[in-house]
Each structure stands twice: as C-alpha cells, then as structure tokens.
Length: 140
Length: 140
DNA sequence: CTGTGTGCAAACTCTTTGCATAAGT
DNA sequence: ACTTATGCAAAGAGTTTGCACACAG
Image 1 (cartoon, rainbow over the protein chains, first blue to last red):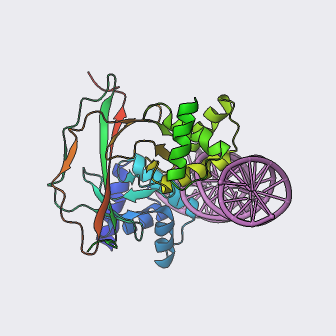
Image 2: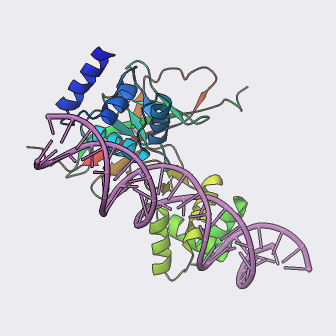
C-alpha cells in the first residue's frame, strides 16, 4: 500500500493537485487496478464501501479536476450519466446496452478511415467511437 | 403547404402516431428542410417563432415518440443535452465544440475498420462516430 | 499560519410524469 | 362518444455551487 500511495501522491503532485486524503483515496480506487470506467455515483459508492468516506460533491469535483489535469477522460454515451475513463490514450469503446457498462475495445486494429477534411477554421480534437452492443434477441 | 402537410400526416400515420396539430407542426419543422440536428429546447423555440405554440413537455414527448417510431435518431454528445437527428440512416457526425452544433460528415467514404468480434452473447446494434472539432488556436 | 479542499445542502439544468382539459377518429 | 394527446406545474435525476469548517504545506 505504501508504494501505491507513494506513486499516487506523486501522480497528483505532478498534475498540480494537492494530495489530500480524499484525492488519494479516489485515485487509488481509480488507478489502482487496471483501466476503469466509472460514473461519479459508482465511485462514490466504492469509496464508501472501502471505508474511505467522501462526499458525492467531492467525487464530482475530483473527477472533474482529474479530467482537467489529464488523468481521466470523459466518455459520452448518452444524455444521462457521465462516464470517466482511466485510460486517456487513444482508444475506443464497447457499450453494453444491457447494463450500461463500458469496455475498452481490445487490440488496436480498429481504425477510422476516409475521414474528410474538417471544415475551414477547425481541427480535429478527438474522435470518439462507441460500438453499442445489444443482446442478440433476434439472432437465429 | 398542403402537399407537405399531407406527406407529414401520412408519415405519422405510417408510424402509428395520430397526426395531431402539435405533432404535425413539429414534424414539419423537423422534416421540412433537409437533415437537421436539434435539441428539445431548440425545437421548442423554433415552434414558438413559427407561431406553432407547443409546450416544452410535448416537444420532449414528441421527440421521444418520433425516436421510438424510427423517424428520428438520438445522438450522444455528452452529458448535458440530447440531440435528435432527422437522418436515421447510417452516418457519422462532426461536433463543433465551439458552439455545440452537429453536422453530418459529408460523403460516405468514412468507415470503421478492424472491429474485433463483439463479446459472447452480444451483437453490434450501432456504431457511433463523433469527430470533435475545435478551433485551431494552437495551429501555426 | 495561510490558502486550498471538503462537506453539506441548496440551486440548477435537462427531462419526465400526473392529472385535468382538449383534440382526434 | 371514446380514446389518446396536450399543457401545466411539480417531481426527478444528475451535476454544480456557496459557504463554513478542516486539512495540507
């Protein structure tokens, strides 16, 4: 745990964020175990379960701060919830309509081709690809 | 106008929706003039400007009914607003971060390649591609 | 100590809903 | 007539914000 916390404290400092108790706690949950996709509510619940009480407002604030600092990436799925992704590199997502969860699309063979020039006066800032998956109810 | 209304009435009937005054009014705004991308608020405002008073709740209900009936498609951009697209065919979008508007990506050379098999027990229901465009502030 | 972060509750935005009235067939 | 849609206002979900207290440096 000390090592992990040490790394996290360092990560926060590098991002220009004070390593407060809450931020370290949330960061350990987020970055402690592989790539994750969470909503604010989910992370809040996990923090409480892990005996790291944080207020929901702080979770929101922290997720936004982490996102601004480049530690997280926001993923747009649809109106209601905001998902945060601990993998900030270029990659795309599967979205399971059944349970509303996200998964990174494995491998990196996936690519978008044939993109026309962006309109005058603009540049591409990011390309989001969401592959929506449903249950194959109507499959043979 | 008679022709247009006639077509719209027919479209609504075909979709199993009663052609009420409000639905016809909103459908004319939506389908009367090429492909459009609107939010509920925008459409509401346009209806008022066009002297077709409709309540905002009805706009929301109507957009959802149209979407369920397959006349519209919902586009996910990010948490806050829900965009509806009158083009229900397979196509992708430019999103202008500057003003929060959407545009269909012209041409159909754009394609997604190298998609891995979807996980066991699921099938691809749709692929969304959003190309986010920003102002080239840091361009040379 | 000094300034930034946190927690709480209230505020806010977007969207949905309940119920009485109005309109469609 | 009978049924479904509309409008209003209230409720609801998710997220942000203001301000007093607490903590990090």
